[in-house]
Image (cartoon, rainbow, N blue to C red; front, side, top):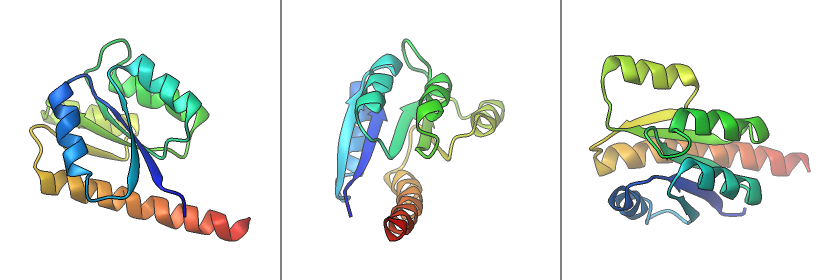
Length: 133
């Protein structure tokens, strides 16, 4: 089975490093974008399975990024990350259609549990798809 491709769309360098560190135990391909426009370009040129995006990003915010990318890639799984953990903001994010939300500052365990759950879903989808071919 091919490796899972994960795009981290995060404008904060240290947050990107932290997420990269959290995902080290997984056998995945990582891509990085510093803003929403770069993330769209990477998704247009690569088969991305999971997008991890900050909500507050330059050029295209995380909610608009998710919607834009899902137009061409509806099966992509998207994890939102945000420092705005108010009930109203979390409700807005969930209603937008994200597969999961991780609130900053996040704990390694919370982030890895979220990622593992989405990774399991992708493996089932990919295994079923390969059976159909």
